[in-house]
Image (cartoon, rainbow, N blue to C red; front, side, top):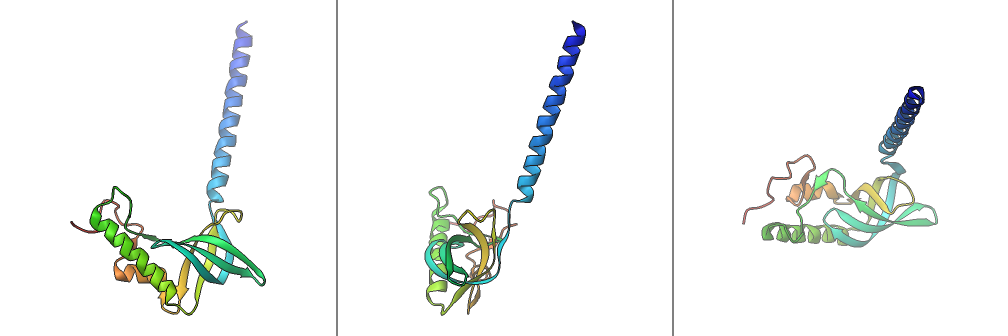
Length: 161
């Protein structure tokens, strides 16, 4: 009877180890495939909607005769929050930052994104730097104080009331 117990304990441990290994490999594979440059190069865009200072909905000509819509997020920056729990001065700064992004595109003769990065091509969510003849939106937001580098301590206030 004890050999049956030890055999079943061994089988249980072996099965558990195998499941853990499969789960670990699955996690590793998913983190390796977290994102890739799905559309390398430069793509003209038409901005449909600005959602916040660094996120906007666009139509991009990704192939001659083929266009796709994307929700593009600008990489490497944080922007002020317009959330209800944010201080009033931060909400005002977020509104100004969004207005700046809207005018950045509205006043442009042409707009484009470079190297569209995605988790998978079935999604609309993408990361890419947007450019107009004025330069990079990321650089413009940083220069105007409407964004800061992503590595900045999140506890650092955007403003003082």
